[in-house]
Image (cartoon, rainbow, N blue to C red; front, side, top):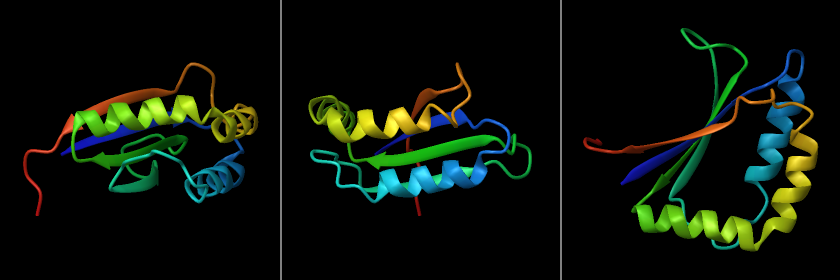
Length: 105
């Protein structure tokens, strides 16, 4: 299993709007998205309070790649969301990190 974590920093004073946008996006049907689960985290202790981490779990890298491809094919929802999110995401901060799960309980 793999965890694909999309991270970004939100602009000062936009926490409520950022959380609203993340909930809105996660509640929107994502055709072809193959993650088993998704969770949205915000920095608390030892991480910047401005940090947002969106973790998606995938059975395989193939599922992750297929999901990214589906996101591009069905870009209408994503493009609309990005047009709103650019007002809360700190420029230059977004990045993806992918982890392989080696132990899970």
